[in-house]
Length: 400
Image (cartoon, rainbow, N blue to C red; front, side):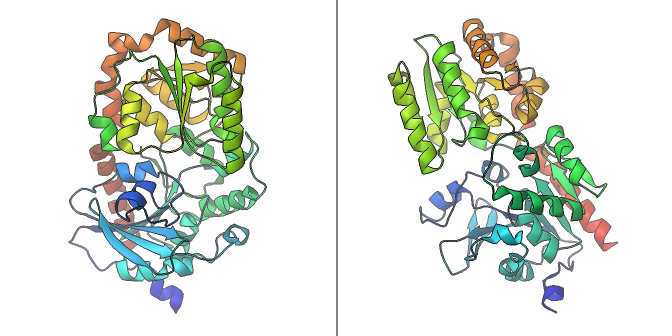
């Protein structure tokens, strides 16, 4: 009976859609709406904020897990209703997140969503949607743990996340990914034929601010400080490929041991004064840093669609990346940036050296793409139109 009561039933036909998202708690929401209280926000979840506010006709609810407080909490932020869901259980991954639905059940019963959209398969989000809304759900491919594990060393416990991901995608009724690469990487695990590609919008600040002039002699690395994002290759390529008058800005955080290694690595380079590290920046400071930079260096070993790369493209920074996965997809799509041979550090260093010498980002044909192609592609309104059509399709199909 409990499971039956938690199932999503549709009682509204002529009103707007009530949509429930299940995702992580965005860091900016914790800082702004929750006054910096520690609710366990561990990532930016920037694309979630890029969707806000939702368009008219969409009553958006966002349920986020918190491990720091015991009481549920509900508040409004940028046109959406957020629900904080306390989840105190530990070692959830070892159970493949199969019991997390119990924590989210009350939210689903109260909201009675027309469609539940689970943002990601590597945590509990997909498993919760599958259990509580077995018919009217949409499973979003965010990362792809199974693909990541084949390309880069990862903690042994991610084998359980990978297993959970395979189970979720095999059971999903509707699957969506942000780009063709992401979808193709997930398809071997997907059983449904209802698959879709819908881009993520980026935050409005990166669409409205003046782009970089391209005059600043600064290279920017923005991403988690971890092996997969290529931080060590970025440092090596900069040290050996950038002229002495260029600087490197690093924005990102990681585990304590990785951060200690980063500090040591910067201190050991030939000119540590040329490198500045910011563990965390708010949106305004990040926009200003991008405006002062000209090149975006992100030699990720594999990624689906880095939000930082999308924001850098919208700000007119010239990306230099390895020729793989999501980054290559976007650089080829816009013909903007430079790709180095995959995982070849010598090639990456030489590609960066050539890019800094040629400064192609200053060419009129490339600068024109910022306003004509890049920013429209990541704008909220057309992306929401696609999402709303898909939500309506799912609601109508499953209620028919």
